[in-house]
Amino acid sequence: MRLLILLLGLSLILAAHADGLFIHEDPQHEGQCFLTNAAGKRVFDGEYDTQCVGISGSQAHADSNADADVDIDVLGYQSVHLWHFRGQDSVVINVEGEVLYHTYWFDNGPDYVEDGVFRIRDAAGKIGYADGVTGRIVIAPQYACAAQFEGGIAEVALRGEVRRKDDEHSICVGDYFKIDKQGKRVHE
Image 1 (cartoon, rainbow, N blue to C red):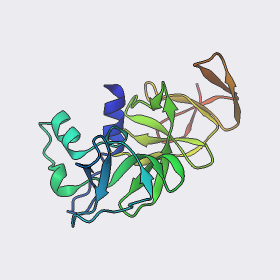
Image 2 (spheres, one colour):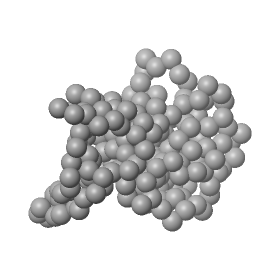
Image 3 (spheres, rainbow, N blue to C red):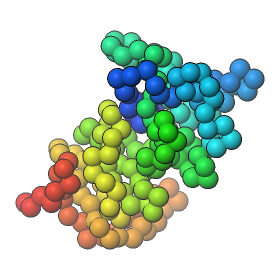
């Protein structure tokens, strides 16, 4: 459920106009999805690979937010998460096909929304944070190591090294310091 919430959060950047990305299940290939623009034309064909579970669709959003005031089928998504896009893995793209950021993987899936934000990565692997509702970047990727926010504070390190703890877990060792949600150092 948390993974579904995160995937929905990544694809919920909505605009106040009728242009966006629309997600459809391919009737010829069960479990496969394709994207269209507001005019119904397929977009980015041949440039991405995904299954419906890999991106959040309008029906999944509508079902999970029955009380929402926004009709996603009219507005469309302003960004979607794709497993593969133009040779890059696990990215969030906008309606123009620009990669906004890469997802940060935690617990075998994209990072959870904690304290209103979730971790993201840039193409070089640096970690930042995005808003859990809008998906907009709130702290640009710049950290080698970054923990989830808790109580408005997160521990981060500009330089660090990922070390494997066991078959399933790894840790990042670095010179950690604390930041607030604006990315400013917190001195305690």
